[in-house]
Amino acid sequence: MILLHRIYSYPILFIGLALCTGCAEMPTKSSPEFFSAYNGHGEFASKPKSLKESQDDVLAMIEFCVDLDSEDDRELDGAPNFYSVRKNAIKDLEPVKDRETVETLDSRSLYAKDHGNINRHDPTQNGFPSFNNAWTLWHNKKTNQYALAFRGTVIKNWKSVAEDALVATIPAKNGVEIPRGNFLPLTFAEIPRAEIHSGFAYAVVQSLFDAKYGALPYLVRNVPKGSTLILTGHSQGAALATLAHALLFHTLHPIDGGKNPFGIPEWTLRSYVFAQPRPGNVQFALDFARVSNQGETAYVFQNTHDPVTMVPETHALVADALADALAETDGDGPINLAETGFNAIRGWIARSLQDGLSDKIERSKSRFITEYWKGEILTGNYKPEREAGSQSYMPAGNVIGLVGNSDPTQYYDYPTAKTDTFFQHHAPVYRKLIDDYFK
Image: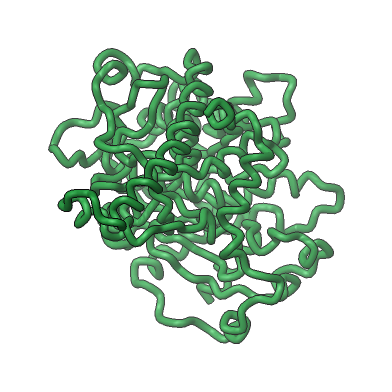
């Protein structure tokens, strides 16, 4: 128990946990014949109408992801041009400047300004604690449309990797706990038994609510009522964008008809995300389908050869599928007993990891606890209805399969294309696939 409680301090163990949970579904170097047969052979079906109408938005969002996720690649000597941002794709968009401070709303710049000893262009240094996250805010000069982009995993920063590796779940309603024993009134889903990835959940809460570098105060101040706010991100950033979409929607539209406590103006929410690792369980995905109008306002672009989109791996029992029915029984059947036993183990692991997260963020409360967490909100009794323990991870949103090529050099003829295990996952590869998709 002590080891698991302190597990956040051991990134190597986390990495092993994350890899093991996904290894059963990782594609081999010889891609499935089904996918290779479709290389360059068109689409499976027609594009959704709402997606056709949003083509320019999608092309712009992937550029924001390239900006955030390819920062270290651009700094290499002789770096290829495909790691650069295509200015023509974002010609109508500009970084937002804060109305009060006139600072450009890019968390990397905000953090670097306060820490003069870091390299603004080094992603291992320019993310803010506790998980080395980063975000940027953009505005379309011709419309009332804004975009908030979240950065993906920085492989060379163990805190960023640890965020991915915290694969236990927490309840999607009132499951975030800061400090330990104090559950915050945050709703990511209303459907019973909905659960979300704990690492992504705590990271998105910090990315939004951090007192100095959280995006939400800037959004409230700079994105007017009636605007469209697009959430976007690649990889880890895709999971954060999806959870942010869900959280903001439920805050704006509470099921009990009450008011949101964060002063969020009425925004129209959309999300376009790329290479999304699975952010929650089946029940969360079902709730998010309702939130996103059955996927009409939330598109998830996945490369068929990208291993990251297949993790965390799903581990579901027969009893998980029958949980509601089993709740009506007397609890002494063999399936019910198995469910109880496995849930006890999974819940113990989840609780141990969450305690470590709660303590970690509590230590930074001078920065994290903001005006949002005062009075009743901070001290209210918001405990979740049940402990988490689900491992039935699922993608969330309207999944668009981008039929990748088994030969990565067909995207870009670059020396590392065949030796980089995650080349199929990179944001520039998604840009190439999306260009092909919209041709």
